[in-house]
Length: 478
Ligand SMILES: O=c1[nH]c(=O)c2nc[nH]c2[nH]1
Image (tube, rainbow, N blue to C red; front, side):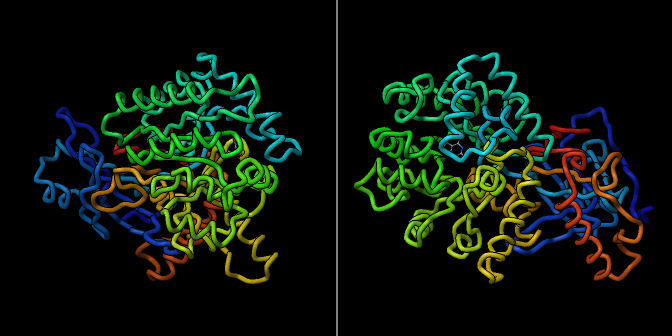
């Protein structure tokens, strides 16, 4: 079906250790919001640290180029040529900036509840069972496997209040090769007797989790602790202020929920009457900064939005969850226009899918609903916009030491290999829709390829994710 005009795989195996890997094929990325870049016949070189050292577009002789560029011998380089199908391409790994790992068994179970009763009925009972490490081991292993298989190369996880189980989540992510921010949930008020901690307990277990994770990965490039006050209603001011001090003194990451549900906002205001707004509670507690991730942010006032912009926080937009438990529609464009970093979160199990690709599609549909309600086009998000939120947006919000989200020199090779015409693919491909690079005009080929990307976003799923790479290492090979 495809017109492959380039050399086949030259060397796949050698006796000496591989010093360098060169991937050859089509690479798709979103260098800026709304812009989709398609690099065809492109050679991307990755060193042993998983860092991209060259990106050479329109490179017909990629083997000679690579050897010349690196100065290495043929046997020291692994060539991975995936250009055997024109419906195969690399995209940056997805970044899930809001996911509750212990809630995974409840995906799809929410009945007709909304946030506060959903927490009581479904969420707290399940999370409290993570005092059992056998259960934690089995569920956390499954979450990591499932999200990796959906192309998620980095995630900001909420765990539970239990230090041992949280440490286990960090160990499992590190072992399996998924980048992860790991949050021990802190909650010391308005929670059920079977699932609550005192201020002193919260403090002690938070410090022990930080110590454990920092020992496991001193570089912090793979797993890192993230301070996680659950949300204002379940934390005392004393606890939030202590976490705020800790954040500021060590420049730690921080994550919490903000302005998800109207009743939740009323409760927060009732519990903290001395503050100007829900956002102000976090602001005055010292929780807001460039490494803070705020999930939802649906019902913010102008002033609250300005506070997020001023403090440099990132937002995790969770449209699947917001539709499922009837929370509302976040105004993503309104946030982006104020230079607030926005990314996507599955929010399992308020959300029902562990797939950021599905969430990207929901983000687009929710933006269409905002347009239908307000009758202006301003809020509409394109397929290219939501791909940006799923990759570059996620990297900005995670704010790690390593550069992620693009195929660019100096960035880490965290990637997915997508194939639309694989066996069992949910995406139907047709010969007349094939881009036929080199045989049609560049504009025609590009137009056809962009259509394929749209088809992938709307119809694709984990079956199309053939390989996943984190830091240059293949962690999923189907
Ligand atoms: O979507 C949500 N999931 C949760 O677990 C939670 N806790 C507080 N607020 C929350 N929102």
